[in-house]
Length: 271
Image (cartoon, rainbow, N blue to C red):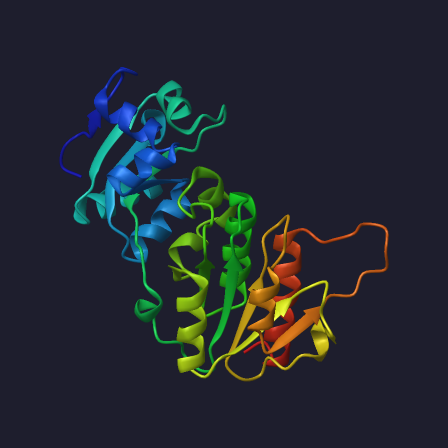
């Protein structure tokens, strides 16, 4: 970079207020922005072609070679790049040990039809009214690890662009395409595409490792508290039961999703 980056020192600066406001869903909806934290994760967002609006860097880290390269890439992508002292980084992220880089990126909202065409046999995971952003972010991360074609948020779900979801995804929010739809639209879309729908359910009649996921498949997971309504289960081709020995009456949604995803991937030879 040919000149020093702009330095912001006041907590009342409008940019600091805007970035801090992104903790609230209302502000994210109005601005169309969300926050990502950490040099590695922000670099991934830039590398994947997500549009950065603002990048803010801890002033005492700005001259490190990796951070200089990140700042250069962000400027090329059209971002406003500034530096700030640690106390303001902490104010934005509300974490005592704030990351050295925080960026505001433009959100993406895909329809089912806009999901990227899968390479090979499609495997999706659909989440019905997931409410915990930590679960959602963790499932995005698992889906990324297993090469899932995409994640479909069905009905009224928590915000994938919340602080908690983005943090839990560890950057996978940039890698895994996800779309929103109501159940009827989702079910019509998957039938037209010839994709089987299998749900994890306490009413399952087939053990999860006995279901066939080798063809085009969608794994449907229910709400953390209520699971899936009966009419949604009735729309499925297969209801799967994950074995449990007793004691705890259920698995965490993110854990159960990981079990289902990895079983489907295992059947495909971990391709």
